[in-house]
Amino acid sequence: PRQTNFWQALPWHSADEMHRASSFVHLSSRLLTPSPDAMRITKSCLLALAGLANSSSAWVSSSAPLMSRRCITSLSATMPPLSSPYEKELPLARDAMQFINDSPDPFHAVQSSCDALQKAGFVEWKDSDDATQIVPGGKYFFTRNRSTLLAFTVGSNYKPGNGFKIIGSHTDSPNLKVKPYSKRTKSKDGGSSGVVQLGVECYGGGLWHTWFDRDLGISGRVFINDEETGKIRQELIKIDQAVLRIPNLAIHLQTAKEREAFQVNKEDHLSPILASAVKETLTGSGSEKKENDDSNNDDEWMKNQEPLLVLMLASELNVKSEDIVDFELNLFDVQPASLGGVRSEFVHSARLDNLASCFLSLRGLIDHVEDNGVENDDDISMIAMFDHEEVGSTSATGAGSPVVGEAVKRISHVLGAGVENPILHDRTVQNSFVLSVDQAHAVHPNYASKHEKNHGPKLNSGMVIKRNSNQRYATNGITGLIVRELAKKAELPPVQEFVVRNDCGCGSTIGPVIAAATGIKAIDIGCPQLSMHSIRETMGVKDLTHGLALFRSFFSHYSDVKNRVED
Image (cartoon, rainbow, N blue to C red; front, top):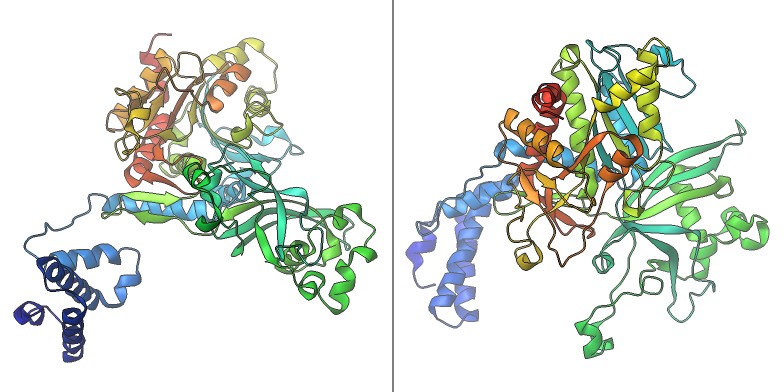
């Protein structure tokens, strides 16, 4: 602090700023014991203050932390200047972050995708429509259960027997879903805890300990009895506020053994707190009290719902509580996605597995249209986003359903002038290819031994081919070679390879399921990421760019590459 030349020489904007810095110097001289460490701490703080002063209000913008750091480092000759090699990747990363923020559940993910497709000129193809409306050069999409989506373009040069280029992904992620009967606290005073909780069910294989002490919102769909039409309609809901929380147990109430091994009982320990159990809060007042009082409601379903939850849903949707007849709701972390790392080289977000893949496939198909790829295409380019991958895909809307096989058959039938031709259909299947895209495991720096030492994908280093000789993944020699050639066409870094250790179990995804159900060649690939199935995951911003470039290459160059590879 006695080195006054140091802080006086910093680029303060005004005498007032210099005066505040002087006060800080004198305060630090009283609080810190004189030492080289104290000097370094004081200098660091002064440099930060100078950086804040020079960055002004821009500090709150998305790129300002990097700007401020550059300003700070320029004042110290001992620190190298920070530069970001990721500037051109950031716009795509921010678009992906917005898509994920808007999609806390499969219903919202599909709705967000439908909105983008319609904006790009795609037409919804409903089962009740005359299927002959599908024509070469057209752009279409359809949904199942509003949680699964298929979208496709028909190449202008399409001929019967040509193939389907399909990118498959999934819309679901591990989460906590509200139970059919949401009421968990039976007594109106909340029992001994004095709080109201919701009954929730674990969906998929989540890292459930990461859900503790997070700000949780509620999203999903609500079924509403419309008195005017006499029909039951669906409304999407997203309460992006910290209305729920699962608190940790204080360390003072745990034994040493319990602290060493944090074990979660999924039934007892994951019930979130919704509110304090105040009787007036629970039942409302006036007419609202009558509407939600159990004694005035003969509906067995409503009697078992948490009144506060129903009131909150009704208020959000601007409907009466008694008009809500059912819902499908899940919890989500309300913290939005963010850029991370000193050079903004990472994306930290919930649901990267697998909304990152959904976003990239959607963007890839739209780019294919905007780049006039449809006009020069001989095939059908398709994306398929499935629900229920995290629980095995065996559902009416999962990858194990007939949805892809039926789509291939129906679309081929229509474009073949409505003539049933098994030979043409078989040719279509043989000419088709599925990119099964799901996030891959990057090497964890603190647990590198968990990876096979020669097959450790790295963040920001390229897409990953996933292989397993026991067919947990669909990749084989031909499909892997085709993807590597597509990456070369796109001038991408060499594709990375992932194989699990022999002493480690291997996950699976939709690739083997689709291949087995349809007979279409498939490969499993993905962007590398960390913390898979955590409430908050991490991936590299550059890998989003790599993924999009590969998908665009797939739609543009698959036929050329396929014709070079002998079956």
